[in-house]
Amino acid sequence: MAMVSMRQLLDEAAAGGYGVGAFNVNNMEQIQAIMEAARATSSPVIIQASRGAREYSNDRFLYHLMLAATELYPEIPVALHQDHGNSPATCFSAIDLGFTSVMMDGSLLEDHKTPSDFEYNVGVTREVVERAHAVGVTVEGELGTLGGLEDGVGSGEIHLTDPDQAVEFVERTGVDALAVAIGTSHGAYKFTRKPDREVLAMNVIEEIHQKLPDTHLVMHGSSSVPKHLVDIINEYGGAIKPTWGVPVEEIQLGIKHGVRKINVDTDSRLAMTGAIRKAMAEKPEEFDPRYYLKPARAAMQKVIEERMNGFGQAGHAGDYEPRSLDEMRDFYAAAVH
Ligand code: G3H
Ligand code: 13P
Ligand code: ZN
Image 1 (cartoon, rainbow, N blue to C red):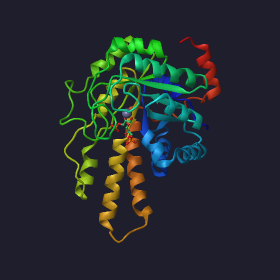
Image 2: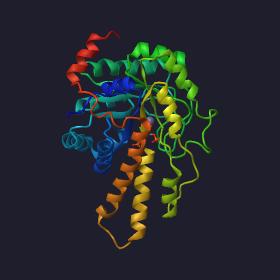
Image 3: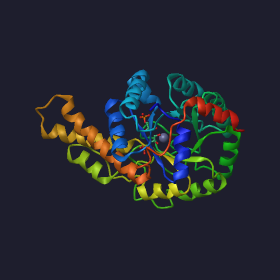
Image 4: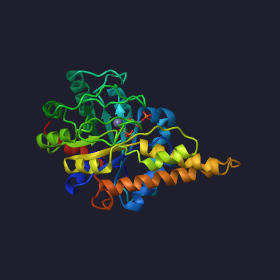
């Protein structure tokens, strides 16, 4: 199966009432972990690469690993997505490379730190939508800013998404999916206690979904940061402070209110790091990287299978025939936006 359009994945998820995990990758083992999890649970899936991932791996390596994944797992619909594009140029280079979906994150300026204004965001996002839709590629935009600076992404100031502004943003840009800010942040340190409605504004999602029932909503910073994964890291010499992530039940509530794409990176990182620390501590005489990368890959696969089951995408891999990007181009050309 070729890589499929993220728009189609999300439209199908909306029709089926489920969410789709968008998992970040930087290397072969992570792509393998996700594809094995998708096969084990029969899930459609979104694989995404940040700018940092593209730089780390040299993005042609990542792209060709993805082609290998579609060859080896022909039964799995998979979209390849640019996570947090900081400029139209970044998004265009992803489109040129063969990504089937891009995020233009115009909530921040190109430095990816300074919050932008609404008109800037509309302008850059619209520019990307025009060029992407002309070749059948999906676009995610973001309105409002995430909190948190742990991973170097984000403004550090949280501006929750304004539902009325969201309506104007979607009308003026024509985005397929909208990332909303509801109080989450990237990285492991999201909340200092189990989040309640004071710090996790699920009501914002409900309100936006009422106003924009046909727009696919995206939750960023959606790792759950399970205590058992943090405990393994700390048991084997790590130093992760007590912390809370986004509980899967809250994500499930979001899915009831239009959330279709759920971004998860930190949980994979925690799972791999814990497994590597444990393997190295248990056999310090080992030096073959396969000795610790195999359990790391297996640990990532396990947490991703749990998320695929939790988000409801499990069992849906065979529901539909993927449409080509040419078909998606015609679909966009026929739509008025
Ligand atoms: O956007 C945040 C993702 O976790 C990617 O992080 O920029 O360190 O690759 P990164
Ligand atoms: P986490 O850090 O919660 O995994 O979020 C990842 C993300 O939003 C990538 O865009
Ligand atoms: Zn994000």
